[in-house]
Length: 177
Image (cartoon, rainbow, N blue to C red; front, side, top):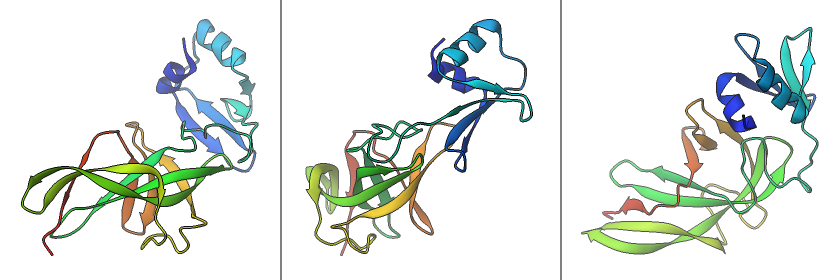
């Protein structure tokens, strides 16, 4: 069984202090799963009653974080009251096991769907000089990547808003002013 499949059957906890990952199962996993856990570097922690492994990477050397985010991935932010705005942020660096550095990028209109209604998509590596969400878009902002049990991966961009990992489909944007 692949590690991604095994992780569907347990609670996953990232231990920031120890730079590790802990897997908690409701019941003892069967022998084949235990073999796969050991093959992937997990060890049994008798006190905590979990399988754990150390995540052996730093921001400069790792290629993906613990949720699979990599440099170049894009997050989409959709917001607005009387209109729907679209903003895009590209991951430019990974920092530790859970953080990324993002910069805002521009978008292109791919289709006009009506009066003041458009379909848009991000333009990778087309970084904006200024961003209303990032103080210095030339440097970027450090954000923590989070994941929900349903598989949604997101970052908080404001205290009341979050960006989800872009799904490679055009997004709707409307503007009336």
